[in-house]
Image (cartoon, helix red, strand yellow):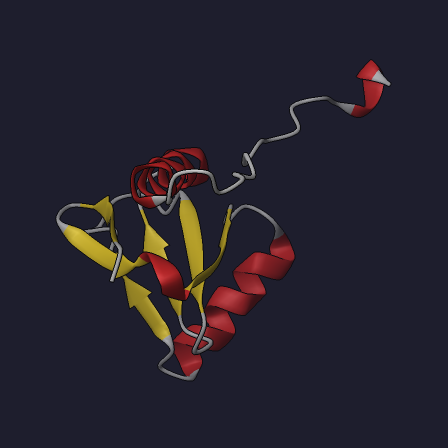
Amino acid sequence: MKLINIGFGNIVSAGRIIAIISPDSAPVKRIISDAREKSLLIDATYGRRTRSVIVIDNGSLILSALQPETISARLQALTEQTQPAGEKQVKITQDTRSADDE
């Protein structure tokens, strides 16, 4: 089982992560509110500002004070460490272009 640190000593099974998203948009805020009402929300921020929302395979959400990019980089590093030799790797990237750049 591969484990990933999501901040403040909190650890999640890497294989159960479906998505890591930013909490800033209104739809994500609604998803967080719904999860809180259904007791499917785990707050791992220790009172800090929520900077990422981790969606896991059972439908629960985990709030983290780490940036999505930080968690993604840790997940990428974990997969690189444990990847068998000769297996092709898919690199996780973030599109930083804005609509003005196109």
